Image (tube, rainbow, N blue to C red; front, top):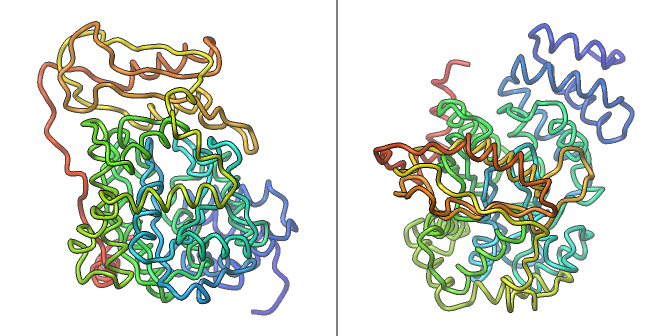
Length: 454
């Protein structure tokens, strides 16, 4: 059909369970990018899509339309294979600060376009902006210059790059429509495909801190993203990883950077071992898909070498400085960390840390000031939580369980209460959960989607 399209008709169609075709999806995306469709109508369509779900064809059409809604970046002149990693979002998830410099140190280009805090999860850009002077908003030519100089660059979307996603991403955060496989897939992949990637590694979170808590929903999202990206010509793999507790020992902004730099410096901390291991696994896959290793296991060996010999650390500092950041703040990280108020949460009974409601922990971090309730709000670079005991740990009553950081004492009360309700202490230790679960390649993703009943 070639007749005129009307937004209200498309809202009704989706609301009533219909599937939109490529032209209708393209109309909505163009309206989001140009501002010709009011935000209330876009919000209504997002809610209808969240409730009714998006078909495989709708998801593909939405991804491509969003990718094509603005300028695109081409890494071809860099003369390297362009590889990236993306996480579906978690609490304490800071692997980007490790895998990007590791992969770059192994000879790959890592053009990483990242986002800000969304819902209960932290934002990579908010964390990097805790470094004085660090610029996340680069033009595409500046982005290319940093990549040519460092091998890695972590930036925000430019106004011209995937403008439709910038609008829809912010609306989803404010309208309770984040947890939708189709919307998540299109948002993530539109940015990644617009960056001209040769290969992509997806970290799809599962467990109490994931946007999609049910294992089958996370599996569906992983398979959906792999199949969609592969159909667009980008070699892709997805790993389902545990978010049943915060990743590493820190959740916030600056404190997550500090934990990452410790690992880049070769320092080991028992509470950060899951972060180190997952980063090496993800980097191993990036190195493999980028053609630098025959297998992901061989890629992991190269990744660990880059961590141990200091080459990944050198890339990280080089990137920070190239993007205007003051790397001297890492000389004495404890001295730089100056929260306005601190509270040490003591264990209220003895036993084992049996479980953590990681979503609630994420909201506690957000309410401390590390995240935002409304788009555009500033975040506190020093807010967050450092954990002294994590899932499975034995703890004695009266011993430190976590330390909370905020800008004022008044901001500590609600997060402390949330944290008490989110952590369960029991007489017996919980069963260990695997850090990495199912892995989807193109073949396994296509088979899964073919057999899935949706």
